[in-house]
Length: 177
Image 1 (cartoon, rainbow, N blue to C red):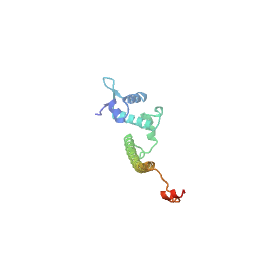
Image 2 (tube, rainbow, N blue to C red):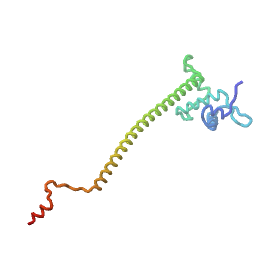
Image 3 (spheres, rainbow, N blue to C red):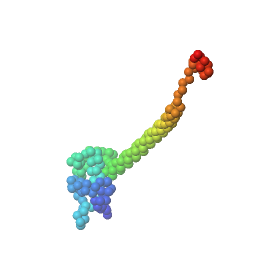
Image 4 (cartoon, helix red, strand yellow):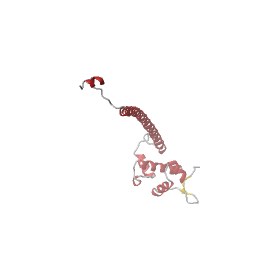
């Protein structure tokens, strides 16, 4: 006997809100059983239809263009040879495989982006360290210049004139007479 599951279980399986499932059931007239409380009960074929609807919506089709129903599926099957006929389960499996590959690519892309950011951060860190060393060197040179300026202000500047001969006081006194 086939198990029937509630809306919440199906919504978790499909990754959509339970009210979305209910809206799809009403819009596409999916014949679902109901329990004594009026809650939908979904069988495997109902879940497959809901998965099909979700895939079509994810591809960008509006709900008005999504077709369900046995008649359209049979007419499509008549146009295709037996070797080309694919079951819904096979399509779901292929879709799931492609979806998991896409998720793997997204994970790899995120990892690569994180690696690039890490390399950039390390490069910026090196540049910041280099600038920090240059700033420290400039600060030391400024302190040395300030100290030299203070010393120059403290010691008065006395120019020595070498052209003026030194006279003794007695000689200069005698030269006056």
